[in-house]
Image (cartoon, rainbow, N blue to C red; front, side):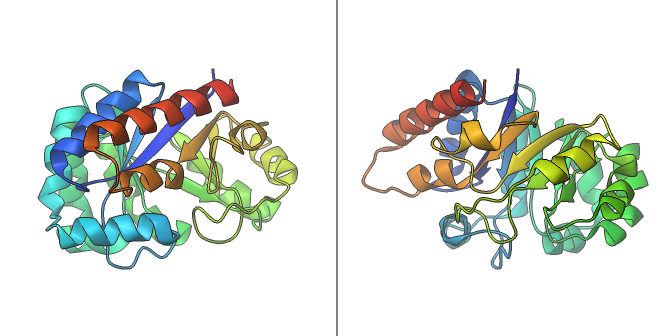
Length: 245
């Protein structure tokens, strides 16, 4: 069965909501949670996730908040931290890896940490049972893919197009999927632009999908009560899980 990784921005509208929606997503078919670490300059994210980042920061988000949420949910669902490198660097990769391991977190997704720089942290992450998730883009050559994925862990994050999250672009991924399959058996998940309308097509040839903006749009809709947001997000999760399988 193909997997669904669900991204949720930590701390908006509050930490209790974050915890509740994650556990509801688990019940609605999500296999992993990408717990977003709000940052002031989320360069890979589109306007939806960027807005959620800013609102969470305005609410006073602190790194300790992601620790608190992880302590509550990581025992129930496979949890990864998604964040930009600056907070990891400021806190120290060794400290963050040890803390994540203590909390049961399984991996880090750091979109602005290039492969060449990530190599310096691979052993440290492994020592703490943390996977550093590798990214592959449609623009990567076969040789580049072979280099990036020679030590891939947990799953590979395939970016569906060159650009930012949520823009809904579409590219032919068959060549890059072929090249990835030729060098590794690590699970391959596709992200960027995956929603209820595109999930079936984007999941072709891969092992799962990563969905963010589709969930965060609901999270940001302040015309809805928190309970209605959770209900709507859960329905989206169920629909996408059905579409990809």
